[in-house]
Each structure stands twice: as C-alpha cells, then as structure tokens.
Length: 127
Ligand SMILES: [Ca+2]
Image (tube, rainbow, N blue to C red; front, side):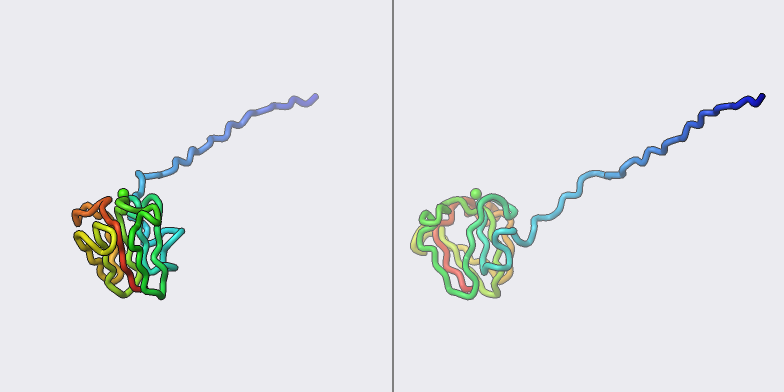
C-alpha cells in the first residue's frame, strides 16, 4: 500500500509595485494637433496652447480685421508663431489700439505677461 502525500505549495507572489514617482508635467506642446506647423500662426483661447485654436494660413499674408468674425474677439491667451516673420496683433479691430509684435518662431504662453490677455481684436500675419 502506498501513501501519497499531497503537499500544497504556496507560491509567493511578488508584488511588482509600479514606481510612478509622481506626475510628470509635460511642458506645453510646441504645437496643437489642430494647428501646429501646418499654419504660420496658432492663436489659442487659453494659456499654454489651450482651448479653441485659430490658425493663420501658411504661405500667405493674412489679415483678420475683426476677430469677432472668427468668434475670437477678446479671447486670445497664447500665441505660437511658426513663421520666420514677426506677426502683429492689436487690441482693437482694424489694426487699432495697442499693438503687440510677436517675433519669429516665438511662443507666448500667456498674454497676461504682455498685458493683453483676452484683448486681441485684429491680427496681421506673414506666412
Ligand atoms: Ca482667453
């Protein structure tokens, strides 16, 4: 007669602890999916390329005489200039009011820095 021993083996399960180490806050993207390098100019409703985006067409000299026509009057909060030209913005329609010049390839993450957050009403750009 043969006895059979049944041994139960408990496998130790190593708990692999995911080392998250805190959140990585990526800097604002250099381009938005809906705008980016396909445009000469990207204008955003929120700071840091956030919110609604309005593009300035590449390879042309463009003019938004009154951004109300684009639903973008007094909402702009950040600007990404993708062109190798200075782009000009005004606080009033028709190139009036205070003027803000954005240098070639400049990325302005928050227009509050320039005292014109939510105040831009017209823009002229070169693609
Ligand atoms: Ca805004």
